[in-house]
Amino acid sequence: ASSAASAANAALEHIRDWTRPTPEGDFIPMAVPSTGAYGVEEGLIFSYPVRVSGEGNYEIVENLELNDFAKAKVQTTKEELLSEREVVADLLG
Image 1 (tube, rainbow, N blue to C red):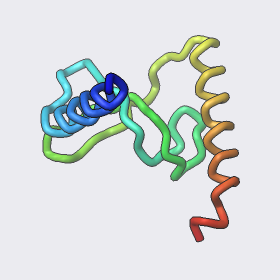
Image 2 (cartoon, helix red, strand yellow):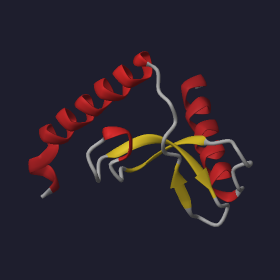
Image 3 (tube, rainbow, N blue to C red):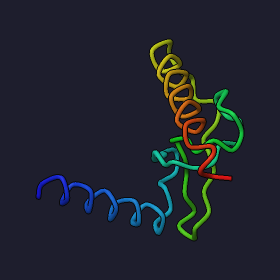
Image 4 (cartoon, rainbow, N blue to C red):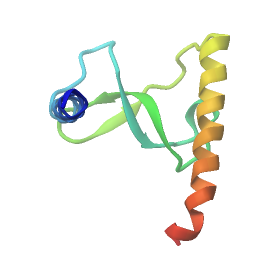
C-alpha cells in the first residue's frame, strides 16, 4: 500500500510540475526525449533538468557543470537505457 501511495504521489507531483511554471533559476527532473544534451543520444528518453512554462512546454537546462561523479552516473544511466532499448527493439518496430 505504501508503494502505491508513493507512486500516486509522484504522479500528482509530476502533473503539478507540468501545470506550474518552474521558478526562475530553478529546474525540475523530468524524463523527456534527448536533444543530445550532456552527451546522451538524441531521441533517447532520459531524465534531464528542465524548466516548464506551465503551459505544457519545457526546455532542457543545458550547460550545468557536472562533477566527475555526476558525469559517471549520466554515462552509466545512458548505457543502461541503450541496452534496455536493444532488448525490446524487436517489440517496437
